[in-house]
Amino acid sequence: MGVLHIAFIFPCPLHTLVAGPKNGLRIKNFLVISRKHLSFRSPNSEGFFQILFLSNMKIGFIIRSDAQRKWGGDLAVVQSYRQGLAELGHESSTAFSPFEQGDADFLLFTNYFLDQRETLSEAAMMGIPFGVLAFQENLLHYYPPATGFCVYVMGCLGHDFETDTDFDLELLFEMPHLVHYYGNMPNRSILYNLDLARKTTLWIANSATEEKTIQRDCPGCKTAVIPVAPGIVTAWDKDPDTSFLQLTGLSSGSYLLQVGRLEMRKNQLGTILATRNLDVPLVFIATRSPSYEEFCFEAAAKWRKAPTLFISQSLAARKEGAARVISMPKKEKLPSATLASAYHHAGLHIHPAFQELPGATYLEAARFGTLSIASHWCTINDYLYDPSLGHAELDGRIVYAEPHHLLDIGKKIEQHFGKKFPPLTEHPALKRTHRDVAQDLLKSLSILLTVQSPKCF
Image (cartoon, rainbow, N blue to C red):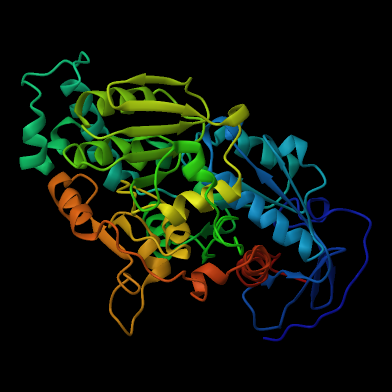
């Protein structure tokens, strides 16, 4: 089977000519998809056609309506795709509904764990082909223990939960598996999005581990693994300044650091408990967050002996015991220079998350030579695994732990606190660009995106 590159110019968008399996302009052995797409069919083929992107196209990203409030890294990934597509001469846009993407050639739904049935119905009415940028968390694996951990800690704080046993914090250290007895089951998004799963042309994962989760939840689906580009802080090419030390009053190398939205999945409660007896300041840098942050402040005030600082975009400045909130200036995210300063001057970066895909903060800490306590349950090891070494620890600057094994996390902090490494700049995971990500997307579409042709010509 060969591919012949010929461009036919048509004034109509793709979905006008491909509204169904029997549509499309047939010219002998060619199926012309649109002004931007052409596929070649050999006489012995089974009627499938490869779509080739021969000129610019427009991709519409369908994002959740509460993206600004509840999304952080996921939204940054979407923006990375858009920036890379623009650099390659392709258009893109974001919207909450396919109805707002009428001129798009291809749609990418985002976040498979939302109820997408209405969105699917709208896309069907528009007749635009679509894929899914899934951010496919392994809910079956992490959600029950993550919720169980949170429920148990909140019970120890005195919050009212119906239970036939008492909440004893010490048991959480002695018996980490206890959390499984208190967890909740995840929602059944896999089932109520089953129609979407079956009709999706292409699933995009950002790691091989996420791809396995997708293929488990949608057997036989077409997938592409496209690693994300590191964030703006990772690309910081100036010498870090002392702006973070000036903001907090801390000294260089004296504090533990965790960066990211305060939420159950990121497990800041675990960090607080694992460090409760360490005489080291703990700093959280957190953008807008739900009520979980209040539980974190309460836990830090009750159990942490050393200072705990919350650099918060949403909490008002306050102090209780050794816990203190410092509001971000003007309620805006910290400048990249200040965030780079925070990583550079930290004595250790800690992020024992129940799930991250992959966890950009690990790359950011590695970039500035700061050791990380990472989680086995995140996909960062897909990015850092070196087959010649047989591990994903780089030169020792990444140390892994189970997210709910508090004693082990605490021991590893004591063992590694204060270790510094040279800045990491040449690793492939740190050198990826927005343009690389967009090129991989277009390549995946051209290779994997197929349409069923009519049986006769």
